[in-house]
Amino acid sequence: MAKLIRNGTVVTATDQYQADIRIEDGIIVQIGLDLETEGADIIDAQGHYVFPGGIDPHTHLEMPFGGTVTADDFETGTKAAAFGGTTTIIDFCLTNKGVPLSQSVQTWHNKAKGKAVIDYSFHLMIAEITDDVLAELPTMIHDEGITSLKVFMAYKNVFQADDGTLYRTMLEAKRHGALVMVHAENGDVIDYLIKEALDAGNTEPIYHALTRPSLIEGEATGRAAKLTALANSQLYVVHVTCEEAVQQIAEARNQGVDVWGETCPQYLMLDQSYLEKPNFEGAKYVWSPPLRPQFHQDALWTALKNGQLQTLGSDHCSFNFKGQKELGLGDFSKIPNGGPCIEDRFSILFSEGVLKGRITLNQFVDIVSTRSAKLFGLFPRKGTISVGCDADIVIFDPQATRVISSETHHMNVDYNPFEGLEITGEPVTVLSRGEYVIRDKQFVGTPGIGQFLKRETYPSSSLQVTSKQPADQRGTTHV
Ligand code: URP
Ligand code: ZN
Ligand code: ZN
Ligand code: ZN
Image (cartoon, rainbow, N blue to C red; front, side):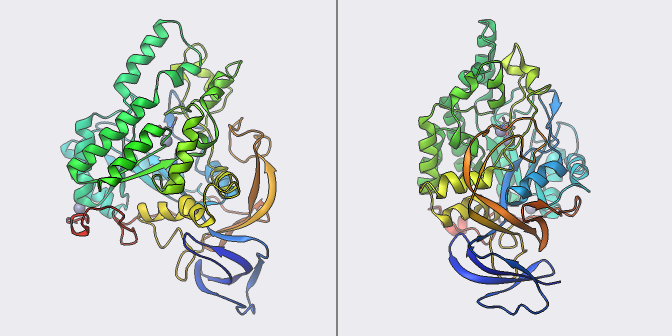
C-alpha cells in the first residue's frame, strides 16, 4: 500500500519546505502540496520535521576486540540505530593477515544476515598489502561495492599497519576508486607511553588518556594527510578528537589535498575528566583516541560549523561495564576501547547542535546523513529526500524532550555515557525503504529486512569537489 506523509516540514541538506511525500514500493514517488490521499496509508507529520534517515558511517557490531566481543550485534545495534533516527550504517569489517579478504567479508555478511533491521554496508580493513590482497582488491571494490578501505595507525600488535602499508593502500585506492579511512594516532609512541605508565604503577583509567596525547593524534593526522598528497589519493579521518588534528585537516584541505574528517558525539560532549570517575567508572569513558580536555570540544564544534569536519559517526563499539570494561581492572591498557552511541548520535546533534545555535538545520542533515551518503557512494539513493530516492525517512518531533538513560535505551549494554543528558527532539516514526521500523516510538521492524548496500566508487558523481585540485586529476582512471 502506498504511504503518504502529510503536512510535515521537509528538511534536506539544502532546503526546508512544507510538503507531502508519497511513497510506493519503498521509493519516494511524489513530493508536493496537498497530494491525493485516496488509497494511501496516511502518516500525519504536522508540526514535525521530515528528515532523510541518518547515515552512521562508523559502527562496530559484533566485533571481537580487546579479548571480548562488542555487546551489540546487527540486530540489537540496528534496532537501537532505528530508534535513534538512523536508517543506514556502515560497519567496519575486520581482516587478518594471511586470510583472504573475501573470507573476512563473508564473516561480516554472516553477522548481519537475518539480523539487520535497516540497510547496511561495510568498510574493509587493510592490515597488509600482499600479492593476494592486490589481486582481491578490485573484486572487493568493483564487484562487492565495498568502496572504503580502513587502515589503523594505532593498536600496535593488534590492528596497526605501518606507513608503507598505508601509502600503498592509498595508491590502490586511487587506482580503483576507494576512499581511504584512517584511525590516526601514533601507535608506536603510544605503546611506549603505556609501558612507561604501567612500569611506574599508573594503572587507573585516566592513564588511558594521558598515554595518548592529542599532539600525536595531530602528528598521525598530518602524516596521513601528507601521504595522501604524495599518493594524490583521498582520505577520511575517523573520530577526530582534538584541535591539533582539525588543524592538520584544515591545512591539508587548504592546500588542495582531498581530506575529510569525522567526529563523534562523545568528543563533542564529554571531556577527559570523565576518566577520573571513582570506582573504576572512568573505564566507561575509554575510547581511542581518548576524551580530551574541555577546550577541544569548542574546536570540534567550530570545525563542524565551518566545514573543516564534515560528518558525525557514532563509533558505536559497546562493551558492558560489568564483565567487559572490568577486564581492565588493575591495568588501564586492558580496558576494551569503545562505547555505545548508535542510538543517540542523531538526537544529540540536533539538540546540542541545532537548538544551541552551533549549526543550522540544513547543516545538521548534511552532517548526520547527506555527506556520508556522498562520500561513501550512496547518494542519491540514500541521504536525501527527493523523487526516486529510497524512502528512508525520519519523522521527528522537535519539541519532545527526554533524558538519556541506560534504563530506557535500546542498546544491549549496561550503561550510557550520556546518562542524565536532557535532550530536545526525538524521532517518532522511522521508515526504511518505505517500511515502518519505528512507528509512534514503538519498534515494528523485522530482523533480516535490512539489505547490504553495494556502493559507488570514489568520488561518486554526486560528490561536490571542494578541493583546489583540478577536476581532471581527481577521478578514478582505472576500472
Ligand atoms: O575506542 C574505540 N574507538 N573503539 C573502536 C575501535 C576504533 O578505534 O574505532
Ligand atoms: Zn579507531
Ligand atoms: Zn571505530
Ligand atoms: Zn579497478
